[in-house]
Length: 104
Image (cartoon, rainbow, N blue to C red; front, side, top):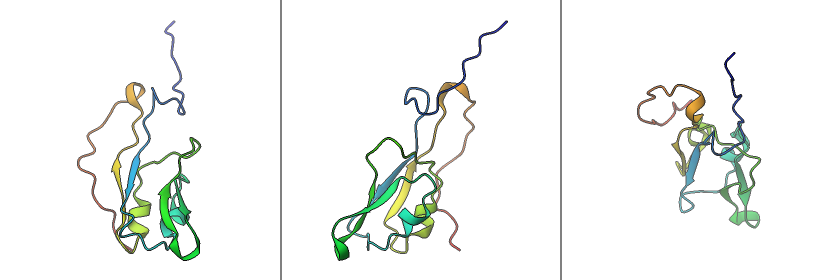
């Protein structure tokens, strides 16, 4: 019988989450990115009219690199820069270059 280890998705040695970069100079503080993020990775920080998007620092959020934030941002201030990666447990397929999402 073969031993099969089930991957632990919250273990950073087995899974790497996606990563987003925010250009705070371009960010207008509209909050669209934080509202649309399915991984709950983004939050708005700062005082009333000075709010800016920020990546959460707690470990409960997981970026899926879906690029919903980039598609929703009217100021083009945010984008995903690395993919979600499951590491050794799953075959990595060539996904090609990361491209901006389609605008609706």
